[in-house]
Image (cartoon, rainbow, N blue to C red):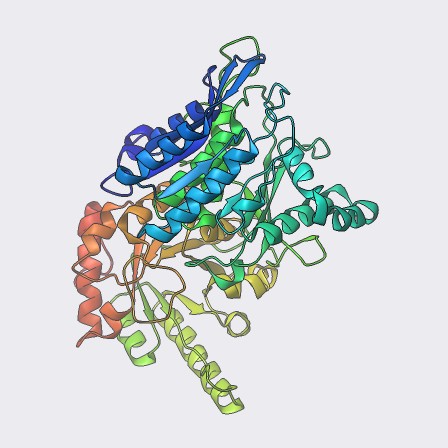
Length: 556
């Protein structure tokens, strides 16, 4: 299935509505035209509120005419009564009056609409050709509290941060820090000032060399890991040597709005939009005598286009929270995961191994309401020792959940870590023992963090609602799982987890994910061994019909 076919299968049955409030580029490379091309390409329905008409081509801007205040307001009002948006991208605003009108409109929208749209502001100030759209710097402060994400480039970042209250703090860092530290500091200042997420783009930063580096400052993000909220990240990609970059900023911000409209959290929307722009730049085309335009390439499905992610510490330096192991240093799986039970009971563990299960995870937790005493810890260690022994006895790939030190100490086949544990575990020590490593993820962003560790497999979840543990994220659902599998399954063994049972196993198989982890479907069954066998045989029928005939587990 090619990318164009895949993207036509919209995440939602009805295309979500995305507005673009921006200027018209008569050359078709940026502004409203670039936004609408992107919105259509990413399976959304685009509506436009035009702020400015420009006469321009790929070389220059010859004339700029601002629409009247009454026309601006009429466009907004007309759309709102019939085509309310899920997300809004704001680009060029040509006057202070337009900023003020838009602030009033967004305020009214928040007060009257059942669904408050996600608003992205791309504070366009200068055209790619160098033409200045505004004779004075606009005051965007009326939009404070009304926008969710700000996406300035380096020029815009400096101009916004040089205004009044920010100027002194910025000067202090400029005198004492590097350009990278300055960029991080400025981005945090804007985030604090506008009370929103900020993605500061580094494509026009001359001091950046082979890597194009953006700084992303996140506020609290519902549906994301607590470890990734109120944090600062650097997103980097190899710099793409091209002049076909006209409209790259417009494309990025409108793509973010589209991915938000498809119900992805902002972390995901940003990395997806980065990948979309990277591929668009790579395949861009020159049409006139000046800079060319980006290609529209459909839903991102090329892992090589995704940015790398690094956390930034409080002193503005990047830090590897992950104690990284060398690439591809974890043991590869000997067998596909297949139906992969996750169990906390040694008796059930033994029964499913006797039933022929060849990959299983032992997940035992210490009490969380009080500090675990020595007796609890000794019991936990004894149980882990017994689980590892059973795995060896039945020649199974047995993974220990979370307790990586004990897994190392007692020679487990592998260890499985969640995102929070992945950030503090010593991955180099795990790799040095020759163990396999499985990592959990609940989004594109988290799966990319897992990918940077080159694990033995990546778990994708939770797919359906589950009661086995409290989750910060919403159920991902089958459509998102299909997207994740299309990106990662060619590179890693992938396993879906969360609410999977015999009734929905076929739906899981249809997404293209590699394998399926089960918890309650086995652990809560009247006969766990029988439940496992039923799941295992159905999975073989669905995914490996030829393997079923010669399966070593057949007839057990």
